[in-house]
Length: 314
Ligand code: BDR
Ligand code: CA
Image 1 (cartoon, rainbow, N blue to C red):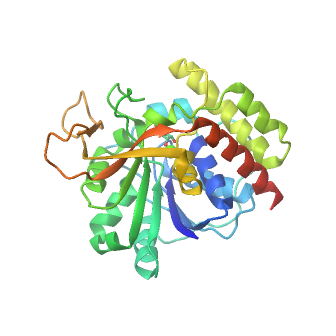
Image 2 (tube, rainbow, N blue to C red):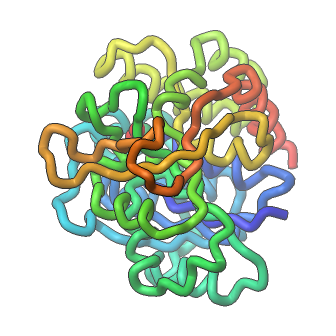
């Protein structure tokens, strides 16, 4: 069993990532931590609990984390446009009943890592504030982190906030810089691959036609997320960026990686939040991450379809 902590800001694709992780055979979800990003912390935390409750996942605790980036105000504009005012526009999912844990997400991450006999995989699918804070507060946890699988950044293709930057990294670039400088074993899934592993209308309809309540809610989430992508980007297909981070744990053939050195732009307004990779190795720095270079879209679509139906049956 792969032991996993998901750190997220649901968010449509975060919600689907949570559903995928909660029913994957080989994943033990130790806890879910939330961060401000796609919406305010109060909303992202409620949304995480809503989704887990809806799917009957009542044995995974949710811990609220940082309500703002380390050194900046929360960037609100695009999150609301893409995910709706409460961060999870579209389907009407009932309010959660499972209580939230009192412990702060950063303290939970530190405690879970320190107490574990085995190494743990962290999957951050929002701004990296909680992860950076945990690494600063307790550098000893590094040795307990098996890997960090991050959704963020764009290297060869443009960003989705500025032409240089992707949302998660742009919202808290200083946190991202700390994580990439930490020496942890990092896998970075960028927009370069997530915008190629998209769901087309027929994929969403096939999901809906499965007829169970989880497939149906995921189809509704994709209806909303897809519609905002058309309105905002003029892009007629729906990515599920965050779920790729879970998908690659289910089947490693999903994504191909290349080792590289990568740093985050934090001082230049034009490139703020850019994930700058030294692909030609000219800086002399040792690689500090595995950068995604290729994704198998068909495998991903099939994986989502199979796991959503399975969620309902089990
Ligand atoms: C990332 O930003 C958010 O809108 C999504 O949830 C995803 O994590 C994509 O840039
Ligand atoms: Ca997210």
